[in-house]
Image 1 (cartoon, one colour):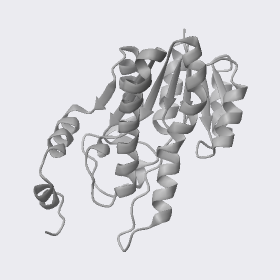
Image 2 (tube, one colour; image 1 turned 45 degrees about the horizontal axis):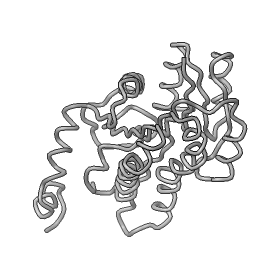
Image 3 (cartoon, rainbow, N blue to C red; image 1 turned 45 degrees about the vertical axis):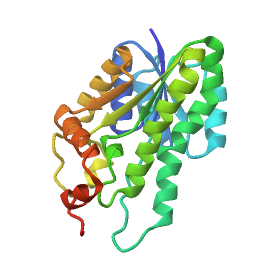
Length: 243
């Protein structure tokens, strides 16, 4: 049995992963701002799920919660994220600040606290939630794409900087469209949409197999992988932007 920490555990993939892990007999430390939702999960799994109120954008919150953890987790799944779109009329600095505060610094805050403890033990895994949107700058999603690209590069750099000497693994997840409260705001058709439960099961299987990058679904992974190498001028036309 292992101990998992999951940020953003009150909804979407975070909640789905927490339920699956508890059903499989694992221990889960669930972190989220909506502690009342976490408490409902704790009632369902009284000996396996432990709720912690935490805003990952606030380093003070993360530091306080990590100090309260009964044990250092074996796996930290850094899942908390937001997907605010850019307003069409002009650049909105607040959107970018808010998005990076959650999607990037929310990951880094937890890693900063837990890395020394995992390194002292000589083992552990960090699993950060990026996105296939990290592969390219998509229309109307500059803040989201940039924040997820930053997470992907962060994990790759940490892997080659700290992984070998610490015994810690750094995994990154690149999902496509998953049915969550965040994607429910999307008015466009979402191709190859997965349920949160299906995505959670796939991610946990990848973690168990220690896959350094966990990318899904396959058709979108192939498509975004192709777009990654399309020349900038051609991509501008493919994305429907003006020349």
